[in-house]
Length: 176
Length: 216
Image 1: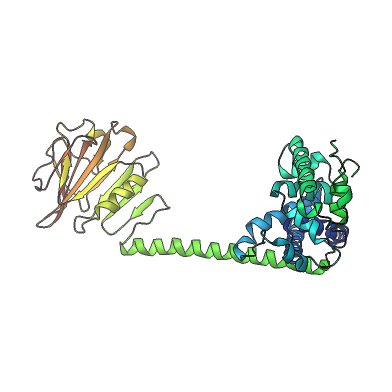
Image 2: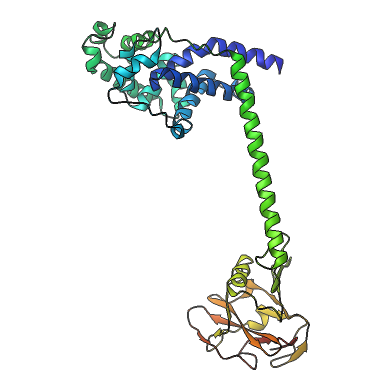
């Protein structure tokens, strides 16, 4: 148990921030994301001997956290506002986070956000992302491509609120 | 990350300042709490299941509802015992009128399609053949119209050889010393019912007497 706990502690310390950002990008609420990630890590520790064997334990944590968001938080009535979200989001995201970009991510369809969470924020490859989400690798690429297109067209980003707006409007989608 | 578009890289970088400050000890404690809750839930589920079984058992003792689980359903009015060869033995108390819907449901549990009534008896004309093979009485009767003394009328039913489309008709009538129960096979899609208490075994069937004798 001691070795397992040391191993899990190392995994937690090196993964927690990336997992939080991945989930935060998808749910857009800092407190909610922190609680979902903490819950997912707790479940990972409960099943650590199984989770440690996965190709991407981080991906399992994020996927579990996002599933928790559907099944666990819904009864608690923690509704995430969509309309008029930008103003509310700024207060919920904490320091070091660009609320405009998060709001733009939140406007993407859920599946695209899941792909971004795993593919971009956890830096998983296409096949691993596809395996975790249970979809085809080609579907992962398609979702990613559509997400890029949507982000470029997002009015809030086009209006220059995001610091990276200039680059966002000039870059092309890169396919693997 | 080389194969990810820069727009996504920038999106990722825009959240770079987010850190999870929850200490690992809190995660481990949360996990322990989850396991404790799960353990309590399992214990509760087991307790509920045990209470349910106990309630069924008590209900069976008092006759309000049957109990099953050991190959037998027992109520004050009747007992159905499932035998190893697929037959079921039905014992009817001649002094306690059974609830027809309960008996019909419990027979169905053991694979016996039946139409159970009280105060009336349903039959087909002509009666489907095979009653004497499907229903045997214990002790066995000796031909149509035979009489035999028994304390509680008992029959053994073999649903496997019931002709297709037939049901076992069981009708109980109050008589001077208890209840008479008539039995016969009927065609499920063609039968009539009578409220006249039979004084003799129905055609192709049997009559269990409330005074402790049986006839077929």
